[in-house]
Image 1 (cartoon, rainbow, N blue to C red):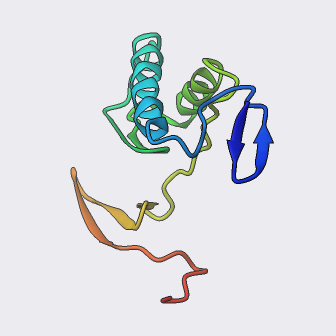
Image 2 (image 1 turned 180 degrees about the horizontal axis):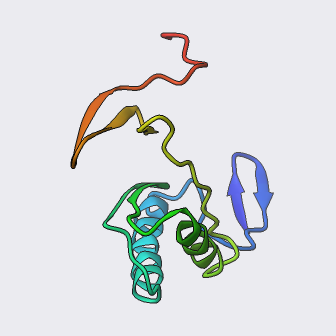
Length: 120
């Protein structure tokens, strides 16, 4: 049971959002989750970068196995579910950065604004 303002809530799972320690504990748990997820997968990404709840992955094994890897991630814990966005025209937005593939093995970066961005 937690109290937010004058409302009481029964917390069934997860952390109290207003707690000072919630983000630290969530980050520690996600480190643990990643260790389990990556060590229990037969195929592994070349790159796995996470910022809070956004993850950037370079997957060298093809689209079919990427779908299997996504299913593997989503099968570890029912409350932690990943969604996937794949590159389009050799580019992929991640956070506020547009990452573009440059042949043969490099990347270029530029500021990315969502189509709904209003400069406010």
